[in-house]
Amino acid sequence: MLESWEEAKPLLGPTKVNSLTHDVAALLMSLLFSYGIYRFWKERSQMTGIAVGVLAAAAAMTLHRL
Picture 1 (tube, rainbow, N blue to C red):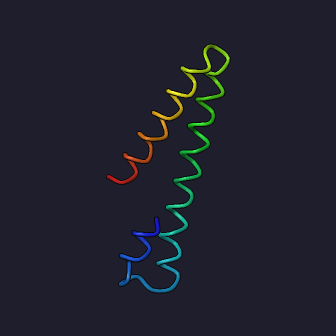
Picture 2: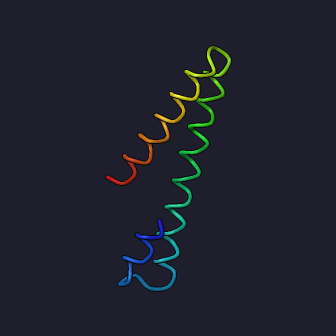
Picture 3: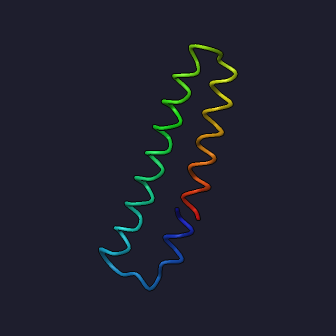
């Protein structure tokens, strides 16, 4: 997020803040989604819960960058 904040030099004022706010919201959503998946799978197998949660977080952040 910091890289995108620094690269957005043409964006000024509220537009730049809006971009940062969207990036932070996307990060929080992906973390909450990953945690939900982890909690769901933790009841079945803790190692599977960790693996699927991390995989979901990585996929969400990768898709966000595209």
